[in-house]
Image (tube, rainbow, N blue to C red; front, side):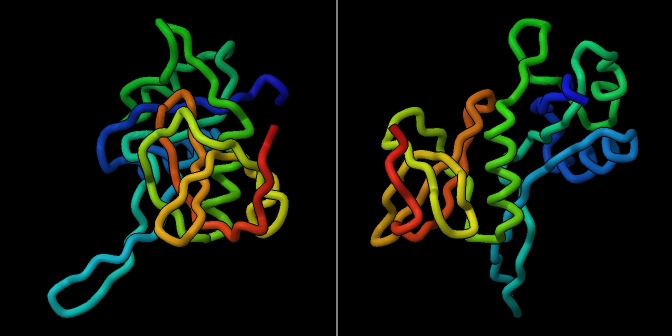
Length: 166
């Protein structure tokens, strides 16, 4: 079990949930994070679950063991990496994304930010999450990034939850 790492899979558009489900049926841990989005229809407002990282699914496996069952899953285009070698996603980044999704706090995809003040949340439902500060209007938002994907999500936080991470 100790050799299992999280990897990012590039998948066909709009197939994130289906790919994750198929991988789970093959006994892999798969994670296709989503967030609720409100859409206005002509006669009502509906809430849809949309992918936080469109075109990507996270999957946990040992790259030293055959990766063919992962790559041959319908909808999977490739495993992200450098050259022909899969590159693992940092476990802390995946854990932070899982914590955010499970907390059900307001979350939005946002541009990847390589610079900004790094903070660690020390209170609230997202305790332990690290990210970059992003101010939006009068609210404070923290951006959590997945370096390998160069994608990020932003989450609203209470300013009292955060301390600067040295």
